[in-house]
Length: 205
Image (tube, rainbow, N blue to C red; front, side):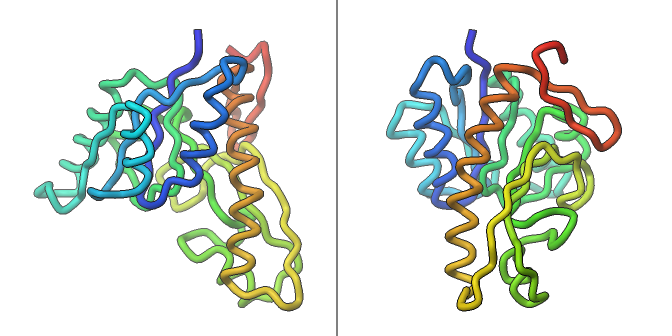
């Protein structure tokens, strides 16, 4: 049985597309069973709809409180019984209800080498600091901002003539490859989390 993925997006869905392409191979071990977004008319949702994959939109502005939105997002994901929820460019912080339901099953990809440069401007902050190596991190999501246990990291050298745009694009390329590789490993091999250490292993569950 292939594991079930719900993927959350906010924009163009290039990370989602990489996962969809990987899932086309049955040996990958997973299928995307739904795609959710925090705003209507995203290209990511369109990519899913074009493949006949169920989609849903839960926009914060449509709810009276952030907790109401969090509960709605939790319910929308839960309807599809995911083994893993993947934040693939999803730009909203989930709340307690979501983490209670999907904690240690919700992964996020971030365009910096955490714990350095959390937040939404990883490549820009890395350039401003003058680091020589940037990269991407795949991690489980907790209640902090990019503070959850780290699953994998990939390094990307910073070139002397890099701009925010050029560095971002090179990080994205590495980030997509890492996301596909490690989501596949998680679903095929299983995982355990002890403190801050994530172990991927056939014997883990």
